[in-house]
Amino acid sequence: MFCINRRKDRELFFDKKNECLTKKEKHKLQSELLVDLVKRVYDSVPAYRAKMDAINIKPSDIKSIDDIVKLPFTTKQDLRDNYPFGMFSTDKKDIIRVHASSGTTGKLTVVGYTKYDIEVWAECCARSLVAAGADANSLLHVAYGYGLFTGGLGLHYGGERLGLTVVPVSAGNTPRQIQLIIDFKADGICCTPSYAIYLADEIIKAGYTAKDLNLKWGLFGAEPWSEEMRNEIEDKLGLKAYDIYGLSEIAGPGVASECEFQKGAHIWDDHFYPEIVDVDTLEPLPIGERGELVFTTLTKQGMPLIRYRTRDITALDDSPCPCKRTGYRIKRIKGRSDDMLIIRGVNVFPSQIESALIGSDDKISSHYHITVDRVKNLDVMEIAIELKQDAKFDEVKDIEALVSKLETVIGSAIGVSAQVKLVSYASIKRSEGKAQRVTDKRK
Image (cartoon, rainbow, N blue to C red; front, top):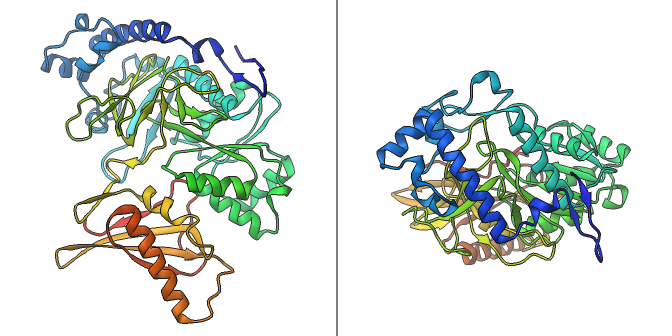
């Protein structure tokens, strides 16, 4: 049940009991859920039974959450190999919704939801909205895409579960987005961070400022983004920008989300159990060490997943948060292990380049594109950086000086040299969904 408990400034919870479980209570709950989960998937999902039999693990070997390390990992390839419905653990008549994530290669990864799964997802999104500052009087502008993509519908149902007013705008048609944000006086917005920047630029271009908006908070996710981009979004839209985390295979948005203190995304770990493993060895890493994020869906019925490798690179934080929520928080996602670029032996994430660029010079915008190629067996990287609309240079040497400065800034940040190419305003393609930051011509 939705409750608001105010203390000092404010203390907001959607479900305080489960958001603030003690360590002992959480261990007991997670253990009970894992034991039940393993038995269910062993009995109902042939792919999991085969995986467990291959390593001589039986459901009876799992007695608590501490035994999770005995279980096999699940990958996106497992979902593709069992396309479309081979990973479902319930009868198809109990599946009331199917979502799917598109990929650049291979088949779609299909996910099934029961009525209970949809209710849990809506509750987790409602928790995320409340943590960001929403209440039943809020008006939420949802600019995530609807359809097979989970972004729009997840936060839509979360908003309705909370009882606020939802405007299901979906992605695209930016002029209409601006009109509705202003006319309806939305106080909350959800979209990708790259689209938030694009939307902010178009709002400014239309002659408005942050003072013309009623926005107070926004939930941004579906792609890695930097602290510098957060600052730019907050400045241009006049709101507080929160990171929300999710992926369609696990639930969609609402697996974890930041609270008002912005100290990492709180994992709703009474439903989703997190681990961090070494990318190469897959051995569990201590709390605080960076590695690949792995999730187990403790309560999902339609398509539960055990130790699913997300490919997202991050670390867990178990230090106390002032908001009083317990459990682990996800530190900002550095990138994806499968999006990581290896340039002349150096690991490079687009988010590192973004962090270095934003705020480095007032003549450049936050729009950039990375092109990697191989010339005479040597990796080369070119970064096209867009100039601001009002950027002016007195002499050619001023342009050359800016290029040199940016190349130095980037080189210091990523540890490998890159060639910078300045391009005119609005020449880099805008995205209304996930930003496409990289073209790798070596593949």
